[in-house]
Image 1 (cartoon, rainbow, N blue to C red):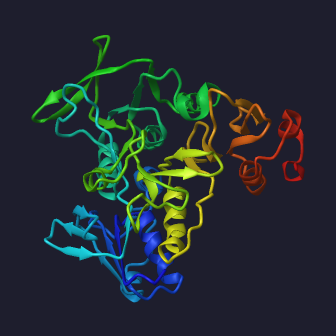
Image 2: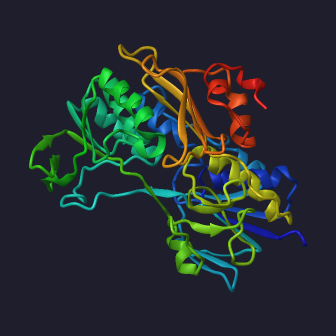
Image 3: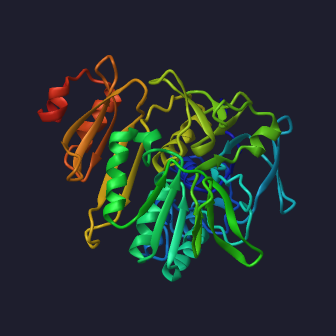
Length: 415
């Protein structure tokens, strides 16, 4: 396969920027166009719900210094949105009137916050959290708010609740689930996060639905629950998940998976010639799991972006990395407990059993999810930092284990 003359990357988040950088690191000398709708240069998303929202910093973690793109001959166009892809003509059109022919195309368009389909769900003054500008606006709002309602008890909702409490707001989190994060870590570990937040003063309304966002043209007043009660608020944050930005891919005729992502093979290729997808939108066939998975976390975008470069240049290597994410909620300066944790792997909560090493109530433990075949499908270390390499090996190599080994043994010696 001859080296492509021009590679176009649509989406200048972490996935797209990592792909552009990896191409240059591999010695690619052709043209690289990195097109991004965000007005800022590429940045990482985790600090938006952590350090930036807390007020510890005014900037995210930039993927590269501002001068990097010019120095590496990467044509970076911020604030430009791709509007159409013509697969047959190998052409990308944008909203600035540009037409860009490609030899290889990478779609890295990321996600957008989901909206709440209830009356008032489109009122002015509702907050979501996805971009740097979102984070800065929400931080200012938290600093002035007396009462905050957060709709959604997932990772973004939980981290935002911690930030709002740090700004001394009265915080209520509403979600129809019985326990925060139950769909990711199960009810036992989810209960640890519930206790963490209640110990820090957060109020939960779990098992309840939002029926309406109340307010008017002048802004939001609060939320009305399905039982009729209204929770008044100065700030309402909608944190009910993210939707992959696949409109461009779908309009071009690319196949979408049941989870809404763009279908790609183990090497991150779509069925269209020379078109790849990475990050949040990639419904990737993962050889270890034998099925498609779509992962919306920081490490996945970073690693897939770096990985796809070699395949753009003629290789066909499968992407094998395990899903990974981390969270920090509260810190040593808060009066209540705090959590820092990492999660590796992909648990099947309907099938896998939970094994805990350490003390859940003390927020000092490692949770393992173990398959019926006695292999570790996922591991989460909470306020424990010594076993990261061992946990990664257990998950990646699917080593046979016993519960006693996980609870009390030397994890590095397993296998």
